[in-house]
Length: 361
Image (cartoon, rainbow, N blue to C red; front, side, top):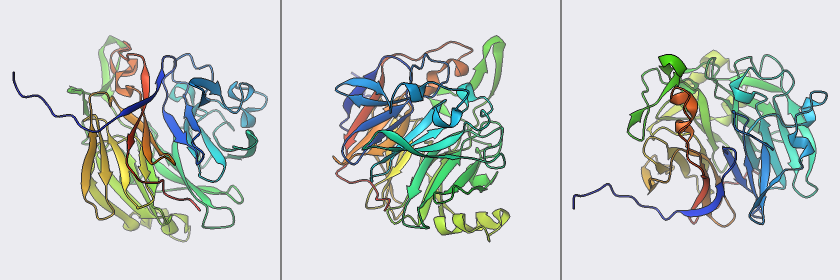
């Protein structure tokens, strides 16, 4: 028998999805598990759900998950990320861009849902100079230790426009774009992704191909809230920046790249998360792996497994497990001349890391 590739990391299956393809997961401080399903072409009956008793339940209810054209600010259109903040709120990031369309006017939003009452507490919408016609709101991190009510940091992972970090003052809803079109938030022009041994390209029917190009996507925040880590989806590079510099509008955006730190290659990542000790966890979708980046920059692989077919969003639960969605994103029809190669079920997996999530307050 010939030698074979070594796989490692003790993965546990939490949930199998036999319906629509999930992207996001978040585990609350009480252990509740939430997931989301953007409307990318699958039959999405609800775009946000909670796993309750082994079943998916629309969250906070089915009505909210049904797009209401007469009240789009209070209904979910196409949710990319859900984040439980550790203090009783589930934050829902609605792209309002089904099938990666131009965002529906007034529909792109950040929604705070009270986990005790399971009702919407506040909705933040965005001006047209913040959410552009090319914007795709991807992921968000929070720090409630600055300002009156804290700040949110959102990645714009546009595939056809400038990437950016969107900064939101949660007290007044004032939002602005930072690192707009910067190298650190833009796709690496020399990046050629290879997944399952094959080059990943946009391949539409009749033979037309184009490079896989998505801007800033993965995002994580340090336990003290002072450093924001981020990466373009079409890149293997890791960057960080001072959150104080991001919030300081006296620093021109054209000068903000001077505050960006380059951490080197970590592999091509979708989701990222930090633990309470400042370690950053990042997927490597080219190598079916999960990386751990220590505060000193040392990187290690904590899991390498053939089941990690495109690790998407990460969350750290109060049980000290790292939870992550595996959704075979690279097997979608848009990469294979219109042929959908995904095989159900999609998975929610976890691995014990013996660390708690980074605090937000």
